Image (cartoon, rainbow, N blue to C red; front, side, top):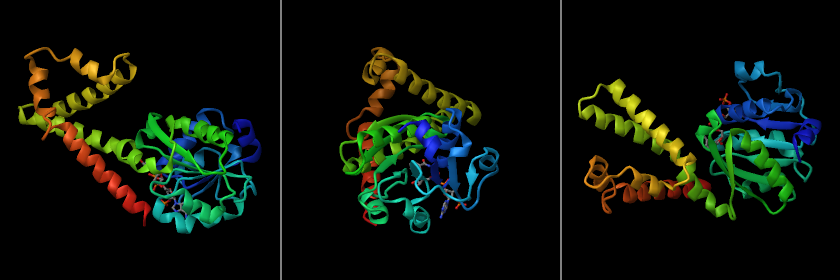
Amino acid sequence: MDFEEITRRGLVLLGCGKMGSAMLAGWLDRGLSPDAVHVIDPHPSDWLKSTGVNVNEAMPEAPAVALIAVKPQMMGDALPALKAMGGGETLFVSIAAGTTIARFEAEFGADSPIVRAMPNTPAAVGRGITAIIGNGTATAAHLDAAEALLKAVGQVVRLEDEGEMDAVTGVSGSGPAYVFHLIEALAKAGEAQGLSPALALQLAQATVAGAGALAEQAEEDPTQLRKNVTSPNGTTQAALEVLMDEATGFPALLNRAVSAAVKRSKELADG
Ligand SMILES: NC(=O)c1ccc[n+]([C@@H]2O[C@H](COP(=O)([O-])OP(=O)(O)OC[C@H]3O[C@@H](n4cnc5c(N)ncnc54)[C@H](OP(=O)(O)O)[C@@H]3O)[C@@H](O)[C@H]2O)c1
């Protein structure tokens, strides 16, 4: 399935909030015709109305793809609008955190191809990372189609098993908030050393963004990059001795943080 088939048969987007809008903007940028897109959303934004896509109008009977981007707690209200599309013709893709493939199979039938995806918020600037897993009916072509759509907002990785979704949620799904907090904490530490709040925040923000970009672009892995900037007995080493402390440093702290997120993800999936 490619953009041509999607253009011919249509794409339904259920829920067009932050994530739905980011994806829609990516598809339109990549040349998908607005005519092919049918959005269902109770309160369409001005931006959505300005795109020229179909909003809350009659749906195609068997669109190529139905993409579910409503909050997990809205599923019960929202999914019936798509029920008639179940049965095999339409590929369902869900980005809802914690809503299992089994939940969608119960709604649309196990004979429907279903891809569950876990994106993250940098999708808003095209720099997200999304993990995907298909149900038993989803073919390689279905996964390729889901990947092509989700690539509009960043990288896509494939999982072997739906059980990995909880760990993915704990690392990349919730991860941007950990990094935002790192920026906050680094800025506060700068303030404590006498910098103005604005300057400390600018330094912290640019440092995290710049180091992230360098880590992605450099040929060396993060361990080597760290070593490259750590001269013996220098300033960086003094700080790293604190951060790399086995009991109280980053490794132990992040292990606990990610474990807590994974535990919560499992609880939410179990209802
Ligand atoms: N944001 C993230 O970082 C992130 C990361 C991973 C996964 N996700 C998943 O992505 C999904 C969307 O998240 P989001 O941040 O984009 O949420 P959002 O901004 O709240 O968007 C959800 C949209 O769905 C609309 N909606 C509510 N009820 C509906 C219904 N019955 N039919 C159709 N549309 C309905 C909402 O309209 P109203 O606002 O008018 O109610 C809103 O526009 C969630 O399931 C979330 O778990 C998000």
